[in-house]
Length: 140
Image 1 (cartoon, one colour):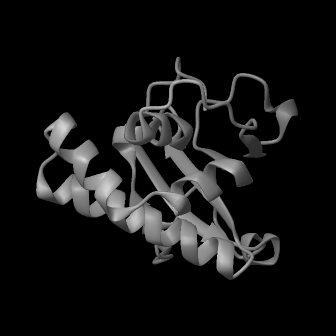
Image 2: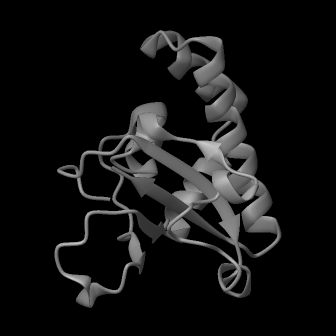
């Protein structure tokens, strides 16, 4: 996701392309009771979270794929839906519990945010195992 987009809410969820046919991109996952994780702290991209946790500033990942709105929408003001690259999902899934705990200590994360990071890792593992994609839904 672009770093110049100001957001007030970001939710991450896993879905297949077929699941997305039932998804309301305007209301978002939380409004429609889809299982999701509030990831507003990582609005600039989950790839940056992986780099912060791993400490590997050399990591390069694929581009997020814009799913909604259509590229032809022009000056759309939100919400947006992007597919998180598979290599980002894989990198998050591969993080160990200890790596995340060390990151939480370095970043002075409170328990609630630490819980969401651990939940994101679990969501990535499940998405990978169930052959689902991971999506970030955001709104201004």
